[in-house]
Length: 315
Image 1 (cartoon, rainbow, N blue to C red):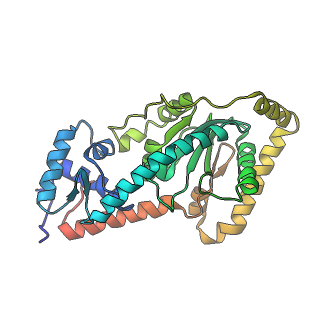
Image 2 (cartoon, rainbow, N blue to C red):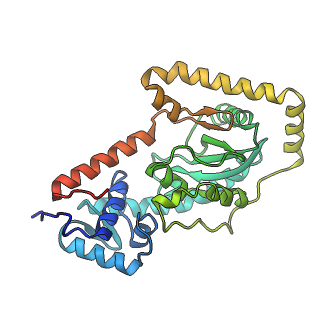
Image 3 (cartoon, one colour):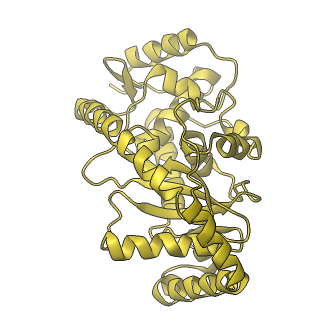
């Protein structure tokens, strides 16, 4: 039987834990206690205190435990699915490191990070290898076009192991949209090439700590140096001489016109500008506008749990 909760019995730590679990419930992804601590919106909480709160809520029927995993859903299959996906992600991380090193060899690419499912430690048959690319300032759109052309010609436009849909330049590392979704993505990216830029990325996005005050950047001991061979440097020099600034503007305008032609009718202007961010220093191509979908689903999860247990969430 479901018990009734209200603000007098729902402790602040319990509410913080529920908020964290409900976000990952969107992806049918149970969490471990240390993962909950990492993404908890509350600071200075020991893992032991989290475990005690989890066990208390589990005994009351508000949460469900499967080994060392916790979920707001009583579905053991999701725990098994997660463990299988974790093992697959571990195998694919080695591939991602090789792909990241290869991507870093392209002209004007300065840093490469893994994002998406892999950065969350989960991969399945529907997952792509997503890469977050940092470029030389003023050459983002040329770098993007070269990578897209390579994918279309040599990979037959396959996204499976080469999905490059988010670019920023090294002088504009601050993420403009500051919400739970972008904070989660930023907190989980895996540095593949250029540890210094990974550290600079987090230094310039200190707002992340407003969402995850317990966050600590990943270790960078396995992060490769960006490839900077003579062929790359020669190509960059030729492009700079052969109208680099003109080509930069051209590729940005061509990309925007293409996206407007294909997708603009499907979105409001605000949503289009976020899903297909097109500026001199950043490019995002997310046709499914996953950011909005996740934020909406999270709100629905919060509202559904509130009704089920008679909770009024604190602001």
